[in-house]
Image (cartoon, rainbow, N blue to C red; front, side, top):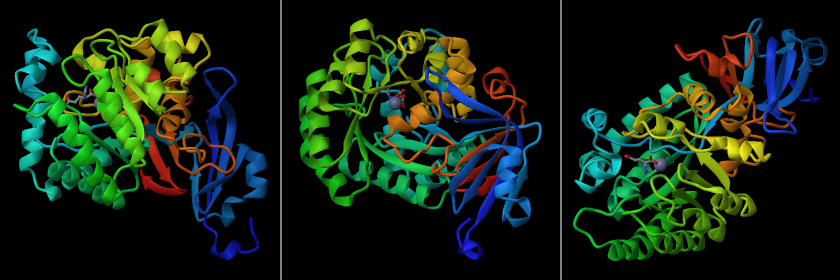
Length: 412
Ligand SMILES: N=CN[C@@H](CCC(=O)O)C(=O)O
Ligand SMILES: [Zn+2]
């Protein structure tokens, strides 16, 4: 510890059966047995065998101590794709889908995203903050310590700004780190010509968002019947000029060129990828675009899962996200890991990498978020399970017993 030990806040978590420290040389994670983690002022300073860590950082000196005997410690989960700020209820659409309606048919008929747009336009900012806070609480209980949240249920400047203000306000008062994304191009408002709407996004919404400094990323739904590759390209390039890093919803229902757009504009991630073929995968890998897969969405739609194995078997990383939204009510990254394993044949350790260090890359976090090595943020999840494998294996109840953010217990 430093000479100024009196003011340092020491956290020690010891005796864990397993500690996941970060990516290994393949596509899984490195795991230490009977291990401990020590953190000073919210940053990991030591990870290793319990005896060694406790020699250097005795529990008597610690402000926060956790005996993790019989338990497993992982980096806090990173959820790199959500639409977590919304109002209203779409459970009836879930029933309609069970009866055979498709997601695209519901959207074309003015339901889906457009229905949530109506609810969000009439909701107050305070309502949105309250809704989002409730969802952040549930995510934290399930181990998420960093989450990306998109706007995109406003589809006009005033409501998009209201959503981004709600994201900012809810995030400021919550232990979970919240990363804001502007997604004015999530759908085309009812009765509006698509080209005219693209013009509005570029010349009105984006400048207003940039002026208020309320978004870090810009995202577009590049999809058959929504925004073409050319329109998506234009919006993402314009966003980049305003300092927003591009992201893209690509190849969910049809591969219409979203992966090429992602590589061209230097997107941090391309998300969904249910229809991506070998050429599309190659484009993403060469463009250094993180593939983000959303198995909860495929599960909820009863659709085929994205081909995670094709990336993993070729030695490339995949990130997983919840895609939490009214069409995919999934706030647990543990359940997402299970779906990654069961639906996409990811080993439990590959799934853990996908919701920690790989997910952190998808949102450009380069400070060690999603890992537990020396210098990483001390965001820790303690599972009440003997091994990390149990995260995918046990899907009946929440296995998370304690969550620490910056070395402080924020959920137990
Ligand atoms: N597919 C586009 N957007 C969201 C769904 C949003 C909604 O249906 O409200 C997604 O990523 O799955
Ligand atoms: Zn989405």
